[in-house]
Image 1 (cartoon, rainbow, N blue to C red):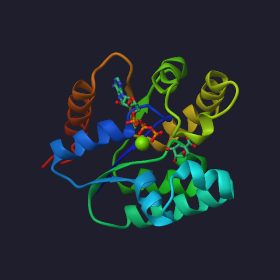
Image 2 (cartoon, rainbow, N blue to C red):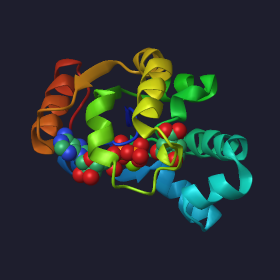
Image 3 (cartoon, rainbow, N blue to C red):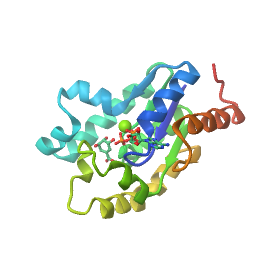
Amino acid sequence: MIVSLVGLPGSGKTTVGRQLARRLQLPFQDSDQVIEVRIGIPIRTYFEQHGEAPFRDLEEQVIAELVAGPSCVLSTGGGVVLRTNNRHALHRSGPVVYLKSNPDELYRRLRHDQSRPLLQVADPLGKMRDLFAVRDPLYRETAHFVMETGRPSVATLVNMIVMQLELAGTPAK
Ligand SMILES: Nc1ncnc2c1ncn2[C@@H]1O[C@H](COP(=O)(O)OP(=O)(O)OP(=O)(O)O)[C@@H](O)[C@H]1O
Ligand SMILES: O=C(O)C1=C[C@@H](O)[C@@H](O)[C@H](O)C1
Ligand SMILES: [Mg+2]
């Protein structure tokens, strides 16, 4: 079973995913990290050198491999839901949690972070709002649960997710 986390850049997929994996005693995978190991350079540099389309091809390949692999908690890249194949692959491989965050708050969280290529633009707040408008319906379509992030701490979010999974009958180890 693959427990996946989806959401906008900075919504906490990596941070929450790592702790959730520890709680569920499952291995942790992060598709962005798998991709970076494979390409041998930061995703940001890959975007600059090759553009977005080859990155999305690689991401689709990595998602297909990960969902076919052993049980894990899988944190995904923020744009994973842009491809229909990814949405279906994640949804049918196990519970998918959408970490839903307000774009203005995410912008405040990430404004000093240079590693997110899509936010290295003149108007990153506008970009985050646009990403939310396009992707919120896709995250909802992919997910079985929507968790509002924002006020809760990472530990609280992890507790809330574990409770949701238990309510849904997902065996927590
Ligand atoms: N619930 C939370 N409350 C406060 N800060 C948080 C919360 N979740 C994550 N953060 C902080 O927000 C930043 C981004 O988190 P993280 O890298 O986990 O996001 P991500 O969803 O994996 O982003 P990306 O899509 O770019 O990989 C980190 O500095 C993290 O510590
Ligand atoms: O939101 C996005 O489209 C992205 C988010 C990151 O997780 C990376 O997957 C990459 O920078 C693209
Ligand atoms: Mg991440």
